[in-house]
Structures are given as C-alpha cells and as structure tokens.
Image 1 (tube, rainbow, N blue to C red):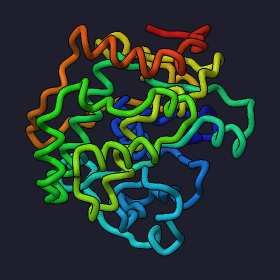
Image 2: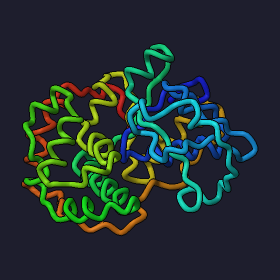
Image 3: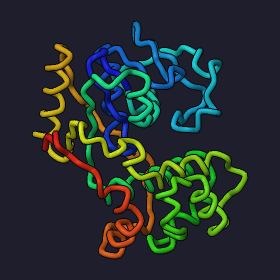
Image 4: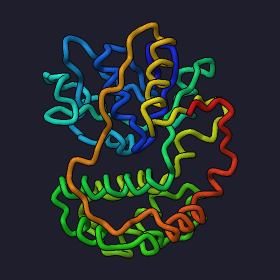
Length: 270
C-alpha cells in the first residue's frame, strides 16, 4: 500500500501487517492500495468494510458493491470487537500503480515460524467458519504429510493446483470454497509478494529495538507520530502437529529455497 504518498509498504502474511495498517488508521494516515477496491476512507472513526470478511481472496470475489457499507468503529477495540481487514498485494502491482520512485518497506520474520503461524491461522479461520471436518483433519497431520505435492509447482506458481492437491489428498471439505483461497495464501512463498527486490528496506519486529526502528523511520519520513500498538495474534487456541524441528526445516527449504536464493537485503535494518 502507498502510505501518506511517502512510501510503499508490502503487507506480508503473518508479518505484523495488520498491526501496521491499524496503526496507520489510528494516526489518520492516507492509504492507497494497488487495487482501489480495497481503499478505505478514514474519517471520524468510520471506515469502509468489505462484506467479504477476508480481502486476500482472489480479485474476482471483490467488487464495488462490497466496499460501500459504513460502520462505526471504536479505535480502542482493534483486534476485539472491530477488525480492519486488509489485502496482501504484490510489490510488482504496487510499483506498476504508484511508480518506482517511492522507498519500499517490508517486515521480515523467521521464515519457518512465519509458515507455522500461517498454518495456525488457516486452522483458526476454519474453526471460525465451523468447517470442523477440515479443521480436524489438518490439525492432525505432520509436516511431511502436509508437503504432499511436487516442489516444482512452487516454482511454476501453481498455487491453486497445490491447494487442490492438499484438499484431495486429505479429503477436506470440498464444499468450503474459501478453503482453496486460504491454502493458496499458506503455500505462496514470501518472494511471491516482494519479488526479491533488492531496494526493499527490511525491518524485523523480533525485539523492542527493531520495533522502535520501524516506528522512528515512519515518523521521520511522514513527519507524523507513528506507534505500533499490537500484533495480529491468533485469537482461537489452536492445536496442531506442525513443529519447527529439523525435519520441518529440511522440508521447507527443499520446497522454498529456490524461490529465496536471489533475495538481497542491501538495505536491511535489524
């Protein structure tokens, strides 16, 4: 997204992107997305909300009608009664829409823990949807079982095929049309979003100093106060068998290392 007409922010899944966008709302920053259907208007604690509750769905699920309903929000209750959903957009689309002259910012997280966190989020969403069939099956599989598809499908960016293979392999609920979308989001590598662009200014949020670095950078470039107030934690207690152990690391790298090998962090703040 374009923030205050000053910089581009890449909202990476499970990378504090919810916390970042909510902080932008609280500070009344002007935000624009590559897909204008996702743009919100932040005035007098009112925003536009999608009726479709998960904006990372494919664009074919989003239309003008879904962006036209106003509702009151209490900015003290983000992450509780009110949730501001946001899209994950590719850097290539942001650059195409807004140009190549803006600084680009992204938040880095340990790749293994990020994937397991995203898997937990998939389970949480299935539970909220009351798709207990898919929830129960996925919560009982291990990492070797989960990676049941050919790694070349990652390089070929055939994420819908991957999702369908997982659904068929484990006999998940085929009537849940939302399932294929959240599985695609799970298996897309981070390079899908940031394109291994070597001009990205990377921040990590693994400690307080890193968080302060990001807050100070945003404040300096916008000339406005900016404070991150929370993270998008898993709200439903989730139990599953995916663990960041030696086997998981080997499997993950076997599937994703090729997509990450060209990543360059020339401008990295840690």
